[in-house]
Length: 484
Ligand code: ADP
Image (cartoon, rainbow, N blue to C red; front, side, top):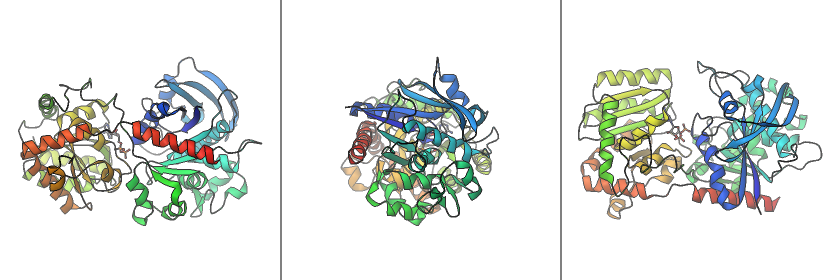
């Protein structure tokens, strides 16, 4: 019997992406399909999403979706069913999904994503006769209110479906003032300790976590870490209280998009067996970043430039990295002060440090193919995708031992190297000394060419496809449906 799941997400590749959430939401329907799950994705009708809808049929209209007119449109994404909340007043805007062209958050994000949740709850309640579901899967705070509406204000006469709330990043919670509560259209009992009330305001993610039948996050280590004050960002008590209902399922990678044997973005395609062909990509990358060509290790970084990603510490370590013969190519965007600081580092070390500010998917592929090692010095990392792409492309990950980075990379300690299972370098505690030491270790290993090739090959052979995680999600849906 097919299980029908409504996946509620504010981003999904290839239509709209600001981070890893989009990769996961985009890949999930194909990942669970082999395990008897038909997944329908619900997205807000941003301009890019509306453009991609061809011959869309209107399945429903709302005269007032929290105050604005809206329609529900049906389409396809990656060959799977798609539903789109077409509410021009909320979503038909230039800029990003959450912010204007200058990067300032939209002031009505609370209303835009409450409305999105309200729409999801209506659909889950059977509003569209032709689209019935057995379970709902909500991603991050932008979708979390779906579960609160299902619980406190379900469509008349309906019973809430089993639900999964996935935390892709606990740092983003959707926290707003209490003055917003009346406009949410929730009954007064929703304003409670186990409802949407959170520290005297409205907590979207918090409300979703309270209402969900099960909570997942994107790695087992992060699932443990968010029970502590250091990583729980204030929600550690709630996570602890949900006990066994909280689990971690590691993200897979889209192996159709990320395969060095077929990747059209690369100067030279390669594989674990034909690793020598990788070399041409390094030369191309050096040229692209204006770096001096050389035999020494080329580090790459592909990231949002934020405190989470440890980029402030990397800035301090750059002189050391160059001092021991390393070079660095960085692609990122975000914090303006950090962007400037990386530009300044590139000026200080001409030919050794290359910086590209912006978001460039194809370049990110060329960097994974041409770099020797990818640095991921995150302070916390729910799963992380760039280290997985690095593994697949022979770009050895050098990572902080936290969250998904701890779960997906095997440190090149002596035993792991001797056993042929090492896939990268891990370090404890994110600070100058530990990152500098990890960079030094990577450089030393790099010059031991046979060992380095062994590490590259072990990483490239690791299976990070979605097959295992797809089954884990499918099993979870089936279990929750059986328990309901
Ligand atoms: P997060 O979701 O916290 O940003 P992840 O590692 O889970 O971190 O996912 C980041 C995704 O975004 C990866 O697919 C990565 O390749 C991509 N990415 C991040 N910054 C850039 C950039 N500047 N250009 C291209 N791709 C980027």
